[in-house]
Length: 164
Image (cartoon, rainbow, N blue to C red; front, side, top):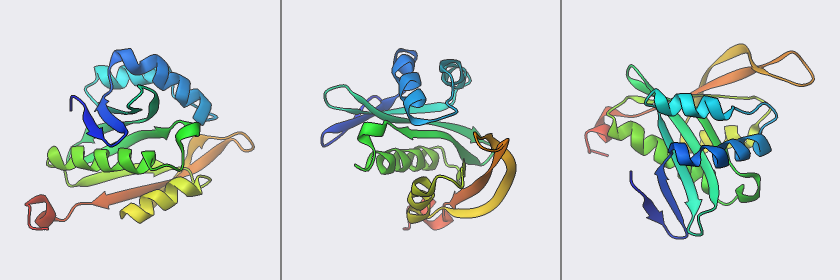
């Protein structure tokens, strides 16, 4: 993906040159953010990183995907706080699914905080189903840890073969 233009936004592969901006947004958006090093390690390990930018060049959001055996693990999807509620999350999620299908994987797996109802609603509207819970998965401020809901989107074999 060299750069896919979408109206006033475009998608591109995350590179080392994006990491300062990515880390800055991560700090704004999350109480317990990934570090720049986490993103750097992901890219070095061959994970898929995607950036969504406005045509002006402003970074709107990003995601990081890790292929695992027969499915993609969505490790991080983040939209800059000023760009939230404008479809950026949906655009990134669609791209994550497109990449996963292109890699001929069976689906996408992710974890999400139960305290993040907007993200859960986005994933459910997209077709993800909750398949489990990981106890004490995330750090949390008012308690020692927070569970994670495990969600999965499974691709139908017919759709993967072009029938749907």
